[in-house]
Each structure stands twice: as structure tokens, then as C-alpha cells.
Length: 506
Image 1 (cartoon, rainbow, N blue to C red):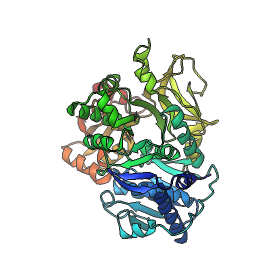
Image 2 (image 1 turned 60 degrees about the vertical axis):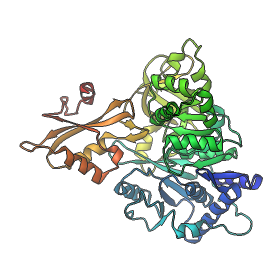
Image 3 (image 1 turned 180 degrees about the horizontal axis):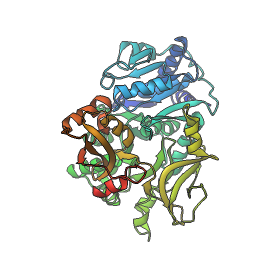
Image 4 (image 1 turned 120 degrees about the vertical axis):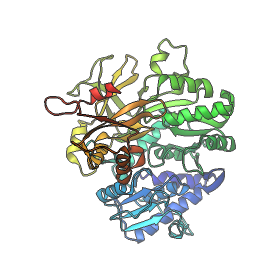
């Protein structure tokens, strides 16, 4: 069964129910959404695309994102969602690796053509209008996708400096959608999901459970995070659900305070705020609960098991009388229904409660593997267990607390940044002899990128040139926020940079 059957079902049961909104105005009913997606599927098939072919989505949040996504699934195609903040050169590499045959873009992010993609369509163009124009008559039946048919090819940063394509199937995403109503939030047809965070990431995947419930989908006119706009949309549409990185939660709290809202007023704007994607400081969630009331749920997941490893429920966050409440709000909750979670030693054997080890997860939400990287897949998924690279501790009640990451991943504002790819760019700058990049704690972004650089002998470093080098070759959000010039990097006897020592210096 394809994910497109979810849309067909709603179009048959509730054809006239509002489905997609752009800001305050209605964009499409379920019948219109299904009609446009089915029409797109038909035209892409007529253009020669076949089930399993990859289509890139490199665009800002837009109501057509949902129509395109379900149109691809209707035809049995594979969506390749790309972070709109990436540099076009980075996107071109992803497109080439995925062998994308088509790309849908928006002009504000696709500042130059993507190399190697034969067909590129601006989502706001007359050509896109024609592709999505509804066809009169009965809706065609969606492609009957086998459960393990690839649906979503998500590129996550890799330690080698090149991203890896995470293969997620219709089965993976169907399991993710079904568990939402059990572990994250109860869904109703009157609910509305607000897409302020990127549709190319976890927020976009939450369209699946909301479509299952026949709920509404709201894309802000700004296409992104504007707390004032988000509260205004909540007042217009009724209490909203949204997914937010901790930095967005902090901005919403500040907006509530600026507007003088108490928890009762906040409840009229937001039903549920699901947060994740980066560490949330305990002090921040305490403040959020005080200002906006019990409307928060935390999830922990990875691209390899999206949104589905653990959940810290609204009830657990609000249960201030529990003797271990302070510990629990610093955790990421308990295993979600379709997965097993364990903390294991280096051999993958489970450790007893209270002992630190690597977090492993197993279940129907775990990826099918990395795109054309069997060795990386075999190293990451062993005997069905996904080795997350995150270090944590389970308590006797099953609450998982993350302690550290075994990899050097930096999470800034909910976006993943791997130091190696920043280092490789900086090493191409004139005058740089050596470089090491680490993350530094930051109250606004969770972490920020800091680069320790060593100048070549007799060469003065121009930090402005380093910044320009980064901006020319990669996304703006990945560039260092701070540079520290050293005479030499601390290294061990094998020549490996001691990043722990660098973090201690910060």
C-alpha cells in the first residue's frame, strides 16, 4: 500500500473538507489536493518517469510541497527532499548521487541551475501550474507500492564530508505515521498542523499522521519561522500543532511574553508543540511550561529512524509532583510503540539501567539502509539494530537520557553540521595550514560552530577571507560563528586532533 492511498481515502470520504491552507486562506480541499497530485503523477509518467525514479524537492515551505510529495508517491516515484538552506553546489552533489531525473525548486533558494538534473521546474511557474492542473473524471488508482518500495531518500551529513542517502520505505513512513497518535499526540479531524520548520525534514513527515486523521495543513505565508505570524495563525485557525527545534520553542516563549499571554491564551493558539532535533536545556522547558502551559511533547529520532526512537509525553512533562520529574524532563522519554530501544556496549550487548552506552533502536521505522553504500549500512545496522552513535543511559522505568554523541556531529538550531565538511572547506583557504572544528554550547542555537585554525608559516590570516571561502562553498548556517587562531592544534601520538581538549578550552 502506498502512502498515496492515504490521500485517496480522504478525498473519497471527505472531498470538500479543507485540507491545505496558505496562511489564513484555503488553498485546497482533500479532493483538490488528490486531484492535483494524481494529475501530476499521470503527467510525470507520460514524461517517461517510472516507479523508483528520484525527484528532487529543493524549495522553501510552500503548499505545493504537499501536492508534489503526494504526486510523486502516487506515481511510485522517490522524493529526495533537500534542505532549502544548502548551497546549490551541495544540492547538485546530492542530485547527482541520487541520479535525480527531475527537480522542483523555488527561485529564492535555487539561485543557479542544478548540475546534472535534466528537468528543473520552478514551483511558482506556469509549467508547474500545468503539471498540477486537475484532470476531469475519476481519480486514478495510485501506484500499488510494495511495503519496501522506496519513498523518501533523505540526505544526512556524513563524517566523510559527503552526505549519505537514508532510504526510507512506505513501510517505514507508515509505521512512523501510525505511532504518532499513540506516542506523541491524539489526533482529530479538526486539528491543524503548522509547517514553520522545514517540510524537507521531520516537520514534513508529520504531514503523514495528520493526513491519516483528515486534519488540516497550514503553511505560513512567510514560508518559515515567524513567532508573531505563528500566534496569529493559531488565533485564526484554532489551536495549532507544530514541530519545533528548541531554538524555535524559545522564540515562541519570548513572543508569548511580549504579547502578555498567559497559558490559557497560549492554549487558544497552540494545541501541541512537538520539540526535538537538538538538546533542550531543562531550564528552557521549565520556562516554556510556565509561560505556555502543558502543550509540549519531546521526541528523539534520527534520519535513519525518523521521529520515532523515544517520546517524552505531555503528561510526563506536566507531572511536577513526580519524585523524579526533574530527571525526566532532562530525558528524551521512553521508547515509542513500534521500536525497541537499548543502551549497549561496544559489542551491541545490552547494559543494565544506569550504565552509559550507545543507543540502539530496532523496529519497522528503521531505514532500509544507505543509498548505494552497503558497507556504511552494514556498519550502522547490525542484526536489525540501528547503532545511532548517540551515548545515553536508560533508567529502571525506561526513560532515556542522552549524555553525549560518539560522533562529532554539531546540532545548531535543529540543523546537523559535521565538522569534517567545514574543515575541508577551510583547508582550501589561502594561508590555512591546519584546522579543527567543534561545537560550542550556545543558549540560543543549542550549539554554534567554532573553528580552530593554524596559519601557514609567515602568512597572516584574514578571518574575513575564511568566512568568504565558507560562504562560496557551503550553506551559510554551516560556517563558523567564531575563529580561534592557534600556533598548533593539540594532537595525540598518532597525529589525531584532541577535540576534547579544544572543547575544554572553550
